[in-house]
Structure formats: structure tokens, C-alpha cells
Image 1 (cartoon, rainbow, N blue to C red):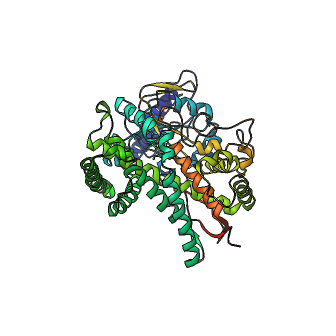
Image 2: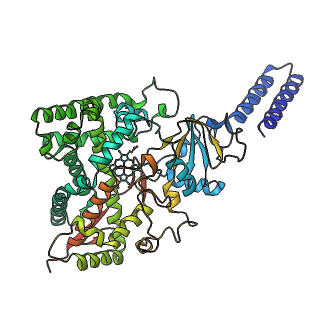
Image 3: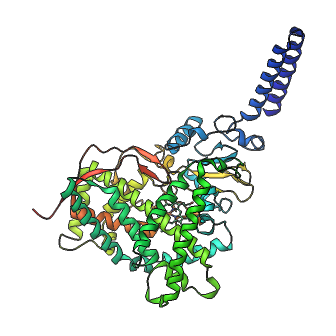
Length: 521
Ligand code: HEM
């Protein structure tokens, strides 16, 4: 195809120029314009390959199968279409091109493959070829390259994952944080009552974000942070903005430029984080008695000598934990509450389950959750309909040349799994747009969401699967159960399920609802 096209275009240019020259010798303008036009056509041919211009050198490598992708803008590729609904646009495109298994696109000069199918998703997420992540410039400047999420797939990352699995997120550690989760649930319930009394409705986003931030902050640093905690909260907010911002240099070799001052702001924020968290680390080291404390910081400081991290690396790891652990949990819970308000029958059924299993007189505890299958199914169903990372945010990168679905994929290609497309695919899920927790209550076919079943893998899968998923789920289950046990939730204005993809997939308009105590009548 390509040589044929090139030959035709060249012939076309040649004829065009010769004819133009013969016809318009006297006047050079038509000749010049015709030459420029021919050149433009030639360049279009160079850029307009399936998948866009970043694939121009690779599209013809395929021996067995042809890679499918849209023709897109010269140079920019699919960038203009990315944005707050990228997951939906990519899903529609993949279906219309018949390329749900694998689709190629260009984001500027970056080659990207997109899987919207469980089989190819498994190949990408679970093999070793895609074990790196593409690092955005802002993530690099904010030190995330030395933390788990962006560290390259090397011994440093393996060491961090081992520490995370065995110590930070071990089942014992997670259950030791139950007291903290309960305390924060009490504070959230107080917050709900206060907002109802003062303004007559509850904006759950503020309450959930505050609760989620204190929860992760105390798990990471213990309960000693006062003003420092508040400052760190503001830094996390600034960090979300910076990472979410579009940066040309992530897609083109333009690192020497600083569009919109993003680099400058990243440098400033990194210096502030280093100073603040660095000081907290030093202070804790001075205090000693590390084994008396139950938080990530003390744990990292008391590691065996051979596993010890430098102070700079410790700052990066702790900062990432706060960063990662805050918004995902709050965003997921806001979606769940929106669904509870919208589907009163589901809410009532979950409350009945809690009443039967736990009763009115005591709070739900972590150990009760295993006896609340319907509540767990609600969480799963919301993760299916509104996955916080619809494109498994923070993609993967090929370490070496490889094959996916028998197609050749060169080293350095970015891979995204469109989990949103998979969980809304009617060939995989019956009636995929309907909210039906019952579908996930089936004891015969228990669909795991922890990464082994790629039909529903909101925490990713394989070596780089989310290490915080058990902690995240423990928190979401407990807080949801406590909020449903305590209140009946009703809409305050019509619930708007519009989405907005930033770092995570958020509700575009904050949920406002009314909460009435279930016990005081
Ligand atoms: C509802 C809650 C959460 C969701 C939906 C979620 C989702 C994800 C997803 C989709 C990934 C990418 C996985 C992949 O590439 O296969 C990820 C990675 C990660 N998550 Fe989570 N997450 C949640 C909670 C948390 C929490 C509470 C923490 C820590 C406190 C955390 C820390 C991380 C880290 C460090 C990574 C990077 C792992 C690596 O690259 O090795 N997450 N998460």
C-alpha cells in the first residue's frame, strides 16, 4: 500500500509540476503555488497513515495483521480529541473502526496503543513488556520517578513494591488502621449533621475529601501533624492541578520550553514538599521510638539496613502515598453516594442488609463487611460504571519491541487500557448501562475486581497493579456502611451523572443531597 501510494503521489507531483511549468512559463506564480500544493500533498501522504503521524515508520512492519487506527491531525494526531471525555471518544472510535482489541493513535509525536478488550488488556498489563510507565514531565519534576508509581521497572522499584506489599499494605497493617477509619467516619457523620442543620443539604464532596485526606495523612505520618498537615493538603491540591495540566513537552521534544509556567510551578512545589516532608522525616528520626508508632513514616525509618531509603527517596514515596490515596477514595465514594440517592431501592436493600447483619445499636466494623455481600456488590457495580481510572490512568510503556495480538509493537510505545470501554461493552456485560448490583452478587460466578479478571479490573493488573487496593476498598466499604447505617439519603436537586476526566474520573457537578438520621424517630 505505502510504496504504491508513494509512487502515485510522486508521479502526481511530477506531472503537476511539468504541466504547470509548460502552461504558465510566463507567470511564475501558478507554477510556485502548484509546486507548494504538490509538496503539501506529499507531506499529507507522509502524515496521513492509520493511527496518525507517530506511526509513519511502523505501520508497514506488520507481518500477520494490520494495525487499525484513525487518520488524525498532522503533527497533533488525536491530541485535540483528548480531554475530559477521552475514554468515551476512544471507546466510540474503537467500536466504529472494529478495533476494540487493539487500536493505534498518535498523541503528538507519541505512539499509543489502546486496548478495549479483556484479552489484549491482559497481554498488556500482565506481561513484562509493558512494565514501565511513560513519565509526564510534571510527574518527574514532582519527584514521582523515585516513588512506586513512576519508578522504572528495576531493582529500586521492586524493592519499593516489596516494602509496600509486606509492610505498608499488609493485612495486619490495614486492620491496625481500623480505629482511625472509625474515628474519621464519626467526624464525617458529624459533618453531615452540621451541614444539614446549617444549610439544609450536604455537599458530600467536601466531607469525603477532608475525611480521605486526614485518613491517608495519619496513616502516613501519624497523628502529630497540625498546621503542617494543612499545608501538605494544599500542596496535594496544587500537585493535582499541575499533573492534570496539558503540557506540550509530554508529546513533543520541547522540554527546553516552559509553556504556561508549569515547570516553574513544579520546581517551586517540589522544593516546598522537600522542605516540609524532609523536616517531618528528620524530626521523627530525632524523636526515635519508631516501633511504638504505627505509620508509614516510622515503618520506612525502621527498615533493615540493606532496605533503607535515602531521605530524598523517602520524601518521594511518602508524598506519593498521600497524593495517590486521597482523591481515588473520595471520588469513588461520591459516585457511590450519587447512585444511592438515585436508586432508592438499592439503598434500602443495603440498609436492610446492614440492619439484619449488624443491627442498630452498634457501628459496622471491618469484620462485618464480609457478611455484607450486597454492599460489596454496590461498590463493584459503581467501579464498573464509574471507574476512577477509566484509562487505568498512568499508562504503561514498552521496555522492548514486542507483540500484542500478533501485531508488532516497537519499544517506547505507550499503552493504555480503556477499562471504561470494557466495562460498558454489551458483548461482555448484559445491559451494560444499567446500575444493577445484583449482577455481581452471583455466588456461582464471583467476579474478582482485584486484577485477575480483566472484564472488571479497576485497580489494573499484573506487576504494576494498584498496591493500595485493599486499603482503598477497606476504607470505602467501612465508610459507605457507616453512612448508610446512619442516614437515609435523598436528592436535594436532580442528580447529574456527567463525568469529567482529570487525573481521575470525577463527577462534573458536586453531588448535593439531604441526609436524615434513621434512628431518631
Ligand atoms: C478506589 C481506590 C483506588 C483506585 C480505583 C486505584 C486505581 C489504580 C490504578 C488503575 C492503578 C494503575 C494500575 C496498573 O497500571 O495496572 C493504580 C496504581 C497505583 N496506586 Fe491505586 N487506586 C486506588 C487507591 C490507592 C491507594 C489508597 C493508594 C495508596 C495509598 C494507591 C497507590 C497506588 C500506587 C502507588 C500505584 C502505582 C503502582 C505501580 O506503578 O507499581 N492507590 N491505582
